Image (cartoon, rainbow, N blue to C red; front, side, top):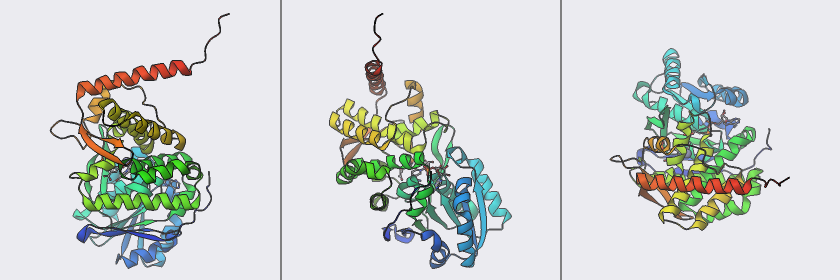
Length: 385
Ligand SMILES: NC(=O)c1ccc[n+]([C@@H]2O[C@H](COP(=O)([O-])OP(=O)(O)OC[C@H]3O[C@@H](n4cnc5c(N)ncnc54)[C@H](O)[C@@H]3O)[C@@H](O)[C@H]2O)c1
Ligand SMILES: O=C(O)C(=O)C[C@@H](O)[C@H](O)[C@H](O)COP(=O)(O)O
Ligand SMILES: [Zn+2]
């Protein structure tokens, strides 16, 4: 589906990390200026454009033209699309391309794509010759509101998401919201999960805005898209500036991910896309919070209603407790064997709590009992003959 063009004014948001500080620039048609922008960053020589086949079709010729016009030598590195590409094998592919093209320490990588491409590129940039600069040009909603900012880079392991990686900040993030025009609907909707997350973790007014504007959001109204991309980047930049390496505060950005990541890995990265898994994760982590007495039923109800209205999944699929618990133990918030989970206290405020195995097992049994009752109610009543 081709979407209408998206108009947005220009914004620059500062990620304040001392020597590693950088700007998130949000501007319509930034794509046309990518060569000049890299020159402004003092990049020179070779640029490796890491992208996937979908993005290559839509944008690679234009990006290559702009970079060449600005004097760069362009080396395209095109990977297959999707989460199953986020592997060490792909890192090997990128390494081979850089070695073969004789990339130097002063060469640059440009991540042209969604979160998968951004995470791979940032990690490749961290390890090639022990570190070369990289720039993010995010193209999906997940990437424009979340993954391009903050320097978490890496790849998945069959047993867990993002288990191999590095903190590596980009030199800049260039967001052209017009590029969302070609994003498939399922990916757009998936991205809304990370947007909703910001409302729950620290901005109740933003959550209300999303509730009130969900129809325009689904239809990509210009001013609404501009607002959600900008507000999400502001919120993430602030958290990352306060706690770059997730010593404490940054953990709030992981709301929905303890269960969400477990569902992704249990599904072999073929089931839910990331945003969908996070949506289900948020609903059930909120439900667990209610069960444990950290928040009231109204918090779960509002979150579930917004998730549903956005078109995201809100039902925990069938999964055995032992499998779920074991997958959750791969989470990076696990400390001394204890799983810590981000739970809401109210819309706009979260806390981080340890999970106890038997209580979590009892909660899951309760979830299943409620799901069974809901299914019975939803089933049409058969008339006796
Ligand atoms: N590093 C972080 O802080 C962070 C934050 C959030 C998510 N992530 C990671 O990001 C990944 C999910 O990102 P994603 O949802 O962008 O997935 P993705 O990169 O797989 O992109 C989704 C799909 O949309 C296509 N696509 C992207 N932009 C497009 C465009 N403008 N036009 C047409 N097609 C387009 C891609 O080719 C792909 O098929 C996960 O691996 C997740 O773990 C990382
Ligand atoms: O930037 C962060 O910090 C986040 O947690 C953002 C998440 O949306 C993102 O999916 C992140 O990659 C998850 O990190 P992980 O450390 O749990 O792998
Ligand atoms: Zn995420």
